[in-house]
Length: 234
Ligand code: B1M
Image (cartoon, rainbow, N blue to C red):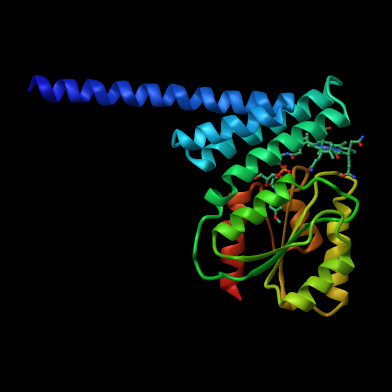
């Protein structure tokens, strides 16, 4: 009886301490990214992985919130473009460590996707995450990079037999390029061959409806759900 009680207390003790350790890792990872300390980010993400902190938790609760903080600091005039860039580099270094864990799947391809950040826009962290998560869900992913022109999207559809195009935009000034690209795909006679999904901080479902995209996802995991649904409809 006593032994059982001790086992329970011990389990609770381990559980609480693991929880505290996990929160500390996540907090420290966020701080390292905000400071733009690439080496510390790498070490901390690796330490968290070694301590069995789930890769998705590291991403959702450590790395992504750090970039929101960086955005807030930029808006408040405390950070400028170089600081944003250095933080983005640290975030990417951390992401590289968990990438194999997020994409670690040997499912057969669920479909072929081409993802890219639209012309004029150089933000690629969200687009990279979407690509990694789609790969993890079994899609074959062609990453077209950033500053992708409508012609490049069209070329990707023609050469790679893609089922789905994923466009990302982070700037209100580059959002209209999603409509330009969608219209160009239609004019090229390819619109009924592909589904189009869009995302990025300023994008909404209303905007997706307005430009005739097949869907919008607010984050990478919902982008995967949407992609699976759309490809299954084909
Ligand atoms: Co820029 N930047 N930036 N920036 N930057 C923002 C976007 C900004 C909101 C900052 C701010 O003012 N608070 C602001 C845009 C304002 C606006 O348009 N309303 C801004 C600005 C103004 C600029 C410049 C114009 C600054 C300047 O030069 N004066 C310039 C533009 C350069 C250009 O693109 N032509 C610029 C440059 C840069 C850097 C190069 C320094 C760097 C990017 C580095 C890189 O990506 N390699 C940078 C950064 C880091 C940011 C912030 C701080 C962080 C972006 C990020 O990586 N977030 C950003 C502020 C913010 O977002 N809070 C900001 C983390 C990432 C995981 O989130 O990309 O939103 P996100 O992706 C999410 C979802 O949106 C979604 O899934 C992801 C999460 O799971 N998602 C999709 C994204 N794509 C999707 C596609 C989908 C589905 C979901 O389907 C296909």
